[in-house]
Length: 342
Image (cartoon, rainbow, N blue to C red; front, side, top):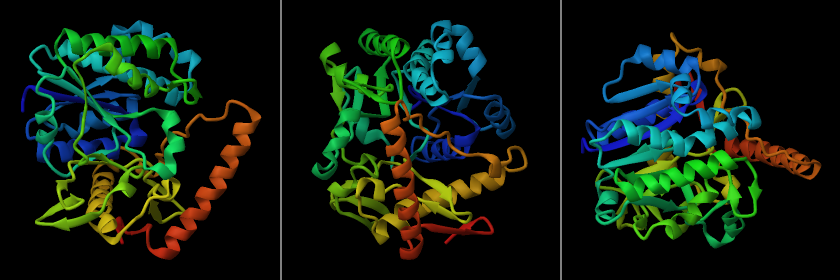
């Protein structure tokens, strides 16, 4: 698997999640290189201290020096919007550095592997680009405005077709990349809808074990058998997208399933979320001497562009707090005591 390279980015606030992604990838794709764009100095210094094998990290300053067109957009975008702008440019950067790589695949920092990704690559024999659908259930079809495909996994073969699509994506993100829907555009994600029109070698990943997430888990029956998490008793879970996992109310860790009207079964809690939360807490204990984990917090999304959206945002915050209280009462939330999740 040495010719399959991965890349991601995060700052110090997401560092524990990024390191969890790294460890899960090393367990299920041994020796795979993971390139990390460190979005601030705290992140860079911490990774330098950890000295993780097969992890290649670069500072934001080094990346910007090689791509000044991306750097020039920073003053016109919020922090999270600038991070989104970097996605395809970072992929192109890694493609240019990994001349011997067959595939370079971008992974969101909050993914976590439960099985080898080999089954995904078996779908990509003739492909140059790989994208993955959200697979929204009908009850939340309104979310399709954010794009048919999810940026969680975007792969490019290191050939002219693959590089051309990623280059086009980079140019579009430099042109416009904001954290709200504008026609068919949304951040770095909306542009993926155009990929199939750019090349006949764009492949939509079909394996439902890839990118199981809070927004699509309601489509499936989840259980645990033969040491694997199974989807509809037929497909093993390859990787889960832990979007929306966050700390709150002092001693708890929450998920985002209520937001998507998604179920949260005992198997989901014990066999998917519990291993991930345990790994996050172990990583936080390990890095705490270097990075004060208690001071980290994910960036707020920049969704307020007018007074109507402001009030919607406030109502959403109240609703989410109500959901958190309900999760505490029903045992969906993890109670953290002395660094352990219960």
